[in-house]
Length: 155
Length: 261
Image 1 (cartoon, each protein chain N blue to C red):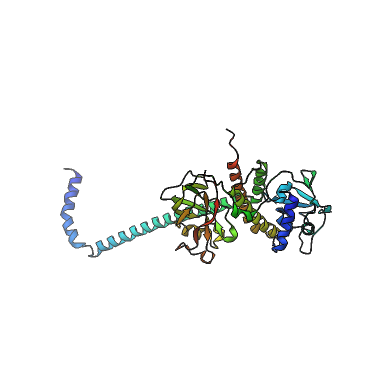
Image 2: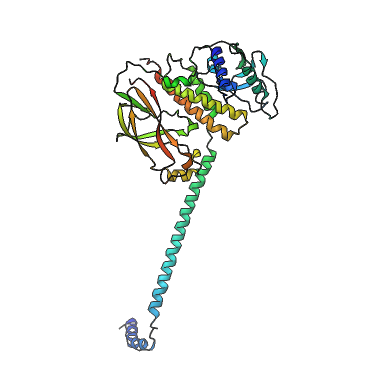
């Protein structure tokens, strides 16, 4: 018989006596359960906070990146574009007969150019001139497309 | 049309109708009148309206207008408002022209001085009055017309571009074309607006969020050999009413006779 076996037997004899003398409080288990639940909630809350923070950080970075990109993106020089389109238009052969749509575009261009000249004459700031130049570009684009469609096919 | 006659008729038309545009603008000439500094060597030409007298005379963006009928436009300084005095001088010179007086311009282009006083190329003048009478080929085949989203709608009437999403229930094609040939008669369109956000008076995000699925239906009756021009009209009094899409309406703003080839 070894020493371990002796100790276990001894323990088995003593345990019932110890159990009767050291009865745990009745609310021990509910307290353990409550503490456990609180800790689980705290862990879940921390995880949620970290995830929310990360999400907010990603959203903020995305917004800032788009803002920077927007700020860094070169603004379209509508005036230069309109002038380039005008030179392209001038390079096209003059049509023998004007398409009705071309007449419409020219009529609207004439009205717009009147407004644009009036804006220059009163010293309008660039923010007022830009939309007019943009519209001039659009109209010249439209006129170019009509003139090109009216060109006789080379085939 | 001879530019001289065209100029005379434009100036006469302007004086009769109390035309608000300056004489240079009536000529189809767009110049930088902002400051004396910009007009130091003469008036810088910013553009010439296609089909206008200025266009027929051969004026181009980048030209510098040195004199008009012998009156120098260089080194004139600024007026009381700080604007280029050369612009006022040009306008008064044009306004003082007799109806059949010659118009002689001296222009600096790429360092070379050009005299522009005769038509450099033949072209018909802009004649917006004649637009309503645009004549189509009477012998064209009947039974068809066009619906067009060609965006030349007048912005001063709050007309903007529009896109046809569905034409009689199907996606119109070919894509990228502004005009769609249809049979003469009634057609149902589903239309989306392309009104720029800046015209709305609201922020871009509010506009983006609220303008989704604000397409509208429009029934159009297309006449034979006629092109119906479609636009999105901004209802300025309801410009922020996105909830009921009351801020816009699809409209046929013009019908032009055009051969339905």
